[in-house]
Image (tube, rainbow, N blue to C red):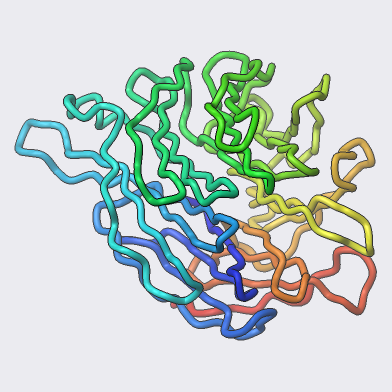
Length: 350
């Protein structure tokens, strides 16, 4: 799990980051900050690969993999688990086991990949995992809270690092890195519809590098790192070519946010730069990657896992985690043109 930054219904931001034995959570004291409370530990013993997604109702859904040791010589007991935070700053529900696509075979269940999660406009939760056959399986919770069974979406040679997203209109899309020269994609043709396999995207996608954002109404733009050179690329439906975004020397999934900058609709990106050891930021006009973009280092060395969000006052917020476990936060300046950020502030840490 990389750092996640979500805004609740009342406008306060919450940051979630993986730590030993669970997840650390920081919460803004008021919309727009600048003060935070945290880190507050969320206990998740034996749970790893935690990710989080938010629905239109503001609920935060955390999903991870729980591995309990089995008897000597036998595979561990593996379950996908889910918990919900219904209100900013409030405790989570208990972790609820969702099983795996292989309920009768512990050996296969142990090969279940890290989950991805998306929440559609009705509040329906979709959980995706790579299954033991290296395809993709999905389990869905309806708007009333009832979980259906696991569905095999097929696919082959799938790698870890699935990326799921939902549009404001309620459609869910999934991108899966695969071992061949293609990324696999599934999408709902309409909100609440059955997921369909889309055309493969001709790209070599690095595992653990995919992310996505709704770049215009009902349109999702997908991002990933090239498996050979590490540079960033983007793609969206109804485009003929991949867009190159630079970013060589970065690592992990890029954080991406659609935000107004000087009154213009822009897409802001942030990545961990392995060369400088800092977070780098770039922006371009939304759905106009050809306009050009420049990556600018920001913040202290050692920051990693960047995340982006709009705060309760409409400002871009960049967050990262320091090497000593502090939350680092930089907010957009409103007294300068362009995407100027204020100095980083630290919350917690050792």
